[in-house]
Length: 228
Image (cartoon, rainbow, N blue to C red):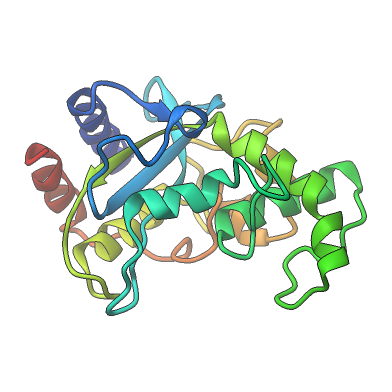
């Protein structure tokens, strides 16, 4: 538990340096975003229980994990946020965002919806149109989630420091195969996921949830926050 408590102390420092959390619904590309970084999403109804007070992180992510990738932090966040205009305003594309895919799958399962094309890589235009209402529900859910980010403008690639911090933050907070420290609430949407790792980890993630965190993680994380 001590490491989780230390993690949230560092997170509180990061939030202060950013002058508070943001929500995607009120964010756009005209804001001053770092080129690259790691982001941390929370949910208003999801509170820490054993590690202290405040909201618990439910999604940690980054971008540009392939060499020569040009995806920026805001471009990644925009994929999670979804569309504003076009043929499907307020919708989005869960095939560009695993975050959206997880949330949508949980909504389908909770409401007993019929959307067999969800998560399929190749679909028809008609099926894409039929997904629109669900994509809107996903956008509405994600856009109201508070988040913060950490600037790390390193080179793209799987061995980047962003990748290191992402997978170790997930490993630390995941409740998979251990006694939960900050378990999700009974009403957390993720409890309805068909992805066992989402349910058991308490995070909107499946990758890295089974790992053990690197002992160096918190010191490295703290050093990057102090540079903000």
